[in-house]
Image (cartoon, rainbow, N blue to C red; front, side, top):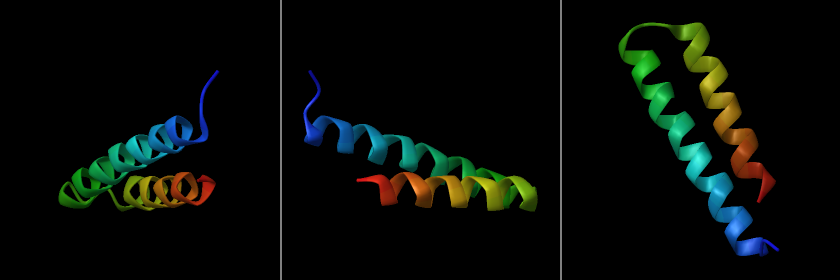
Length: 48
């Protein structure tokens, strides 16, 4: 059984990965992907 803390940690790790992809998308000027990645990261951080 997963604890709330382990689930929260999972969401934070996943959101951080999305933020790193967001930065890569900005550098490559893929603004549509950057917008998607930033929104996805924020949604994940709002879950915990």
